[in-house]
Length: 427
Image (cartoon, rainbow, N blue to C red):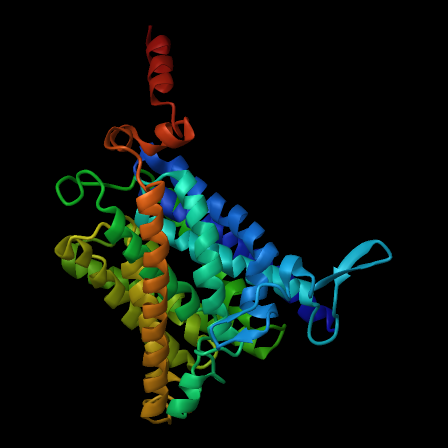
């Protein structure tokens, strides 16, 4: 065992864990004041429910279990982590310590990926869903969607570099840290649920503005920081690839933030803080699948393209009439698809512009489309079943009053108390 690699991977797991609180603030600042607690709670549930499901059977389905049809692993082999953890004289440790780092650290790292992925979906559903329904959804979606998708892409399954799609086309599919598994997967799920549960009251008819833009910026900064664990950690060691992934992630994110800002300036005449935060996240999303295989120049080009496309895509919800509250589809869906497909153009030695041929582009498009199809079908089944049984939404009156009061029984801000205190001081 290499203790340096072990230390880096445990640090990376902790950085990726931080991304879900980052998402909580990023999304929380964008909702209205009457819904911020519910938004934070949806991220909290993503952590807690996923932590339980992953420990019981999620890890086994994704990584530990014997392959079943290239789609998922059996849930029994790694049930309750029995393949990964053992007691040694009464103290639990990793079952194996050979290789770059202990298997127990890999469980930790992959748990955090599952947590952040399902948390991303919540932004599309803001201000109108029940916490109880969300918790059940998280458990079902991690089991039947995320874990199988991780198996397909990262554990030798259908969409992996060794899978049937790659073999059929004659090129190795590449998704370094989650363009398909995380971003396309979450965005498609978000869109499907939004279409099932419907729009917020007043969507498209009245302005629905962020209540705390500094929270949005804080969340974006935390995400950028956590993303170093997300991407550089996906090198699975303290090595040169990890260092390069750090660099390419920063280069692409910087470019995306700037091109989003330029696009916004042309369209509205302003460089907004909300746009800067969104541009950062768009760049992080787009470079995720490609962080190890695009040169510094192409990383910046990739990020720049993603910044423009995602900025433009976020306005489509008003034209097409779907209420993706916080632009999960526009940022994560378009950004994830862009990054995944552009490997076919910019991938070193394989992309059309970097020494390759059309096959890399073909395989990247195929894995992206199959990820869309799988996520769409599985999420539709889960979301429709929940809608027809316990229901997704709070009542209209509860939504108007604020989901924080109806679902959490709390308010984030005591406006009445503040006003009363000011009046007393004046008197």
